[in-house]
Image (cartoon, helix red, strand yellow):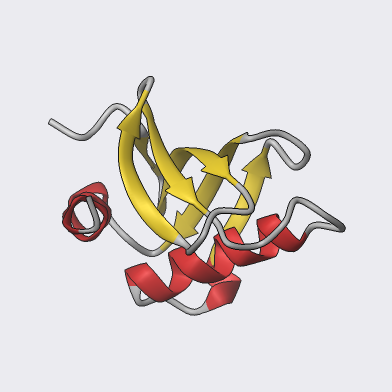
Length: 99
């Protein structure tokens, strides 16, 4: 069964993430309240944290940045990110290694 923060949609997966900006470094912390918790070194200013989040996820998952989009939560700590072209199992395997 897929993790609670992961949802498979046609041709992509959606991740429910909880971000903590201005952390000492960018990393996956683990699961928190049914969401994937990530610490981001970027500050939550002018979309910097969102850009850092998408870049980090693309790098972690080995996909081009254009395949990672923010679906919801632009100004919130709780976000929904869509990753094109990957299955839930691949995403879960990569993200659980970071915890």
